[in-house]
Image 1 (cartoon, rainbow, N blue to C red):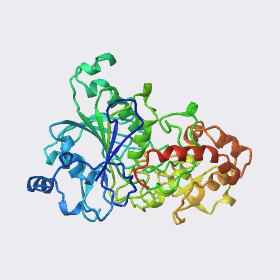
Image 2: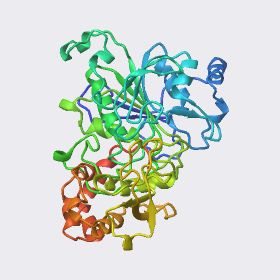
Image 3: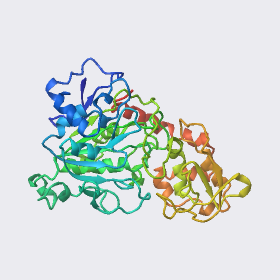
Image 4: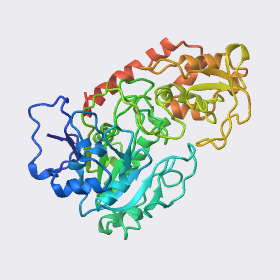
Length: 445
């Protein structure tokens, strides 16, 4: 085991700690061994508690990829006798041996007698069934009765009073009585800038830094972690679908991304949070990973997740990406595309995750990409072709496109008739700078 200190801080304490058991990782000889008293031994008592939570301790193998949540022996001790908050959704699970069966993190921690005070739910809600952008209300988990605080809608950042009982305004925060001592963050990301879980991560880190609460990240693989591509976001176009100057596909896990947020001081007023990352065991960025659970309602399979960074640009146009069909983010089409360009047709209808899909009930002409080969770069040709074959180019783009792209240039380049190669060439200087920045925060080679 190793202890990796996060160096980008002016504080006299360790701001970021990475507890890691990556046997195939590449670490320097200067890294120090984790002290024995920092580990949670697999005693008979602990094993019994793991069994009570529905887990098989033998499944926590060093010989197979194992997500951060499965490294219970590394983080259980950190949660004992603490008031715990959890940022979680349907992907926040601890797997058994075959990754087909699992227990939810919240249920498992409760069974292990951890004092879970609140669950904070991102876009799509705690159970992951809400539409993209749908307003999520606060409430209680029907299974456990634990309060659920929505982090989507008007309350994207936890309020101080949700973290400190007596804190009613910022200068009182240190005097407030903690509702939460440590915040666990465990969400399955898909590695795209406009996937809002990394924006939720930003606000969680910011709120916890201001309230002096440690953030514990249980890391998970990035299914699009094997490449880096797309325009880098320009600060003037920052929004909840893109908060940081990173490319569309950043090639980092949630844990690595959190280290970058902290190290680059992207939080409000340059604050940094105390950060602990429990890493994935036996994982590299090039490791293929098929998500066992849908990360959100409209990303139903590996193909959709792989196509998502390329097709999501269509969300800023009048072209549907298959919401309201069984092939979300695997098809695209519109009533406003020339029929002679398109060999595929579909009609969006309301379904789970798309109560009012774009072009509901209308015949859309487009393309079926569900059998396409996996991509290792952003594919722009479909966006360019759709624009060129649009019946009315004046209504093709909407204002959301610039937020998704993170720049006005991409729309301008397409309207000016630039080809894909020329557009991608214009990204390279910023991409190369980002790749150098990214290296500082990588946990997995």
